[in-house]
Image 1 (cartoon, one colour):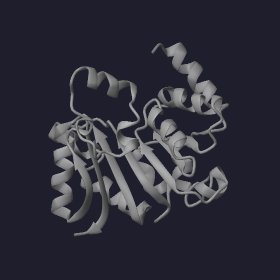
Image 2 (cartoon, rainbow, N blue to C red):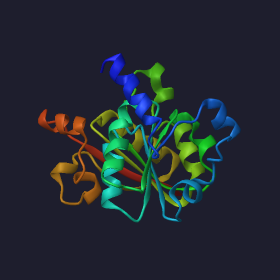
Image 3 (cartoon, one colour):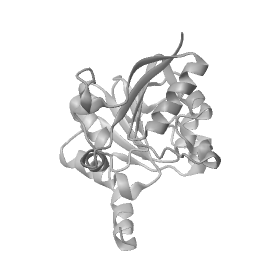
Length: 226
């Protein structure tokens, strides 16, 4: 994407009523009154709150919003020029139950109160295979603790990825921590047990992975001890 196109999207994002772009200072000071107030101040209802972390173009968040109109969806990514597409589509289609937040994922514990979130989706994140990059892996111990803090006691995390490494790493870590795995499959398009929201929605890149005969894995877990 050219720099002119990026600048155009950044400018357009500033006019979108479904895009929120706080500065780091505003996040740490809660200057926009975000923490603990998402349902009341932004969605204007008391429906379940679902996050998609690293939402990319926003395809998953938008399609989940269509599939589950009784839930609120919030796509989070630092790259606003990417989720511009999802935000624009949501506006064009009149979807009032999906917003986009431009921020770094490691700040989520400053953006959401304890027990404020009902579900978290992590869709096709960078697996960060190299050891020195593990601190950026979205299912490492530090991130799991952040998710555990903001999720309700019955809240769940969904991980959908083409990375067998990340799928296996996360399962091993969950077993070590004794957290409950509700569902796990290493090839969701080769089973009839996968939930509709897993196989019924495909991102642009996921379609490419499938064309390359890559297996798509899915994992759902919560933080109750087993």
